[in-house]
Image 1 (cartoon, rainbow, N blue to C red):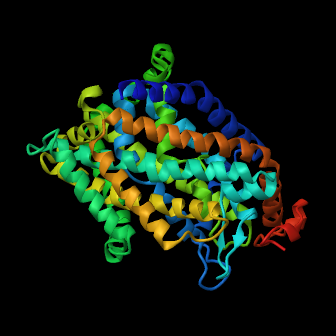
Image 2: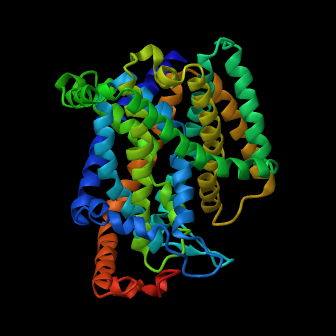
Length: 471
């Protein structure tokens, strides 16, 4: 097992440095320059579009699609991921996380706009789609679509759920009753049974309740973070000095490669906001909008909410608190130590409750994307009930295993599977970026003439007969 882990760790290291750093940075910059930094230039417009009503009755609105993608983004990565990046990579990881967020928002715009253009119409009249569909339809490479779906399943049913389960159980390490051998098994069993119950048809009330509570918990988390930051206001100037000094420290950036603040900032930022990974377009395709660019713009907001708001709240809360960061407290303990400086013993309890809610919705929400991938791989048909039952049982076992595996293995598997999705999605988006840019120009042209933009495929040179929408 040691040799297997060492091999996977080497794959993870090489994949992010240099492969994914080049793909993410180059892709994001190309998208940014080609769209004239649409993620910044039209930020105000993006915020306005969030509240726009759907074009038809009983359709999915931009806001609803945004909530689906945001729900998958917002989770344990905003708390544990950021804390891990600081503890293992240094405070400079925060800066590189911010940079990749801004650049990545352009990638999110492009992939979501393409998902809207090439979306399909279901039997109920609603739309669906994602990278698998624009790769198949626009690039004529169905084998690559199948490969992308396979990596998506490995990421969301395996890699991310392993990590999510580990992150949840690790929050209990702050309590006196925690035993390194027994507690993870007990917690893993409870999580697995709860998830399995919901997946196999029960627990609908539980899911609905958590969907309502999680946004409230997210807002509460930001408020608690602000209280801690302002309680240590005298540390704020020094905190930013440390972040920027570490971010531009040559040894910190390039030293150790896998352990550098640059690599950790990119890894944890990508894990948290998923910009360019190819997950959010699956939700974006379901929105009923009059122009594909509208949903592309809305998705940039989701990236900002995740990284610039929630991830930053964690980073600044921890660093301003003045508590020591090191490999020994990486993850939940670092956050719990920081919050304890103001709220005492109540702090870790709040983090545990937040993690339970975030993790549970993430574990269930991850499988929304998996279902879409399974349907695509099954020739666009819903797999049999027997198959789905067996699949959900396997997913439940994975959730249990996630609670008892080592931290390094959990992060490595999530990084590798997510990276494989990104390696396929961003190059495909680069090839198709001209279509997204033309759609953006069409949108801005109509806006300048005072119209509410309505898209027609022929206006940007696409054959409307080959698309399900936009005739």
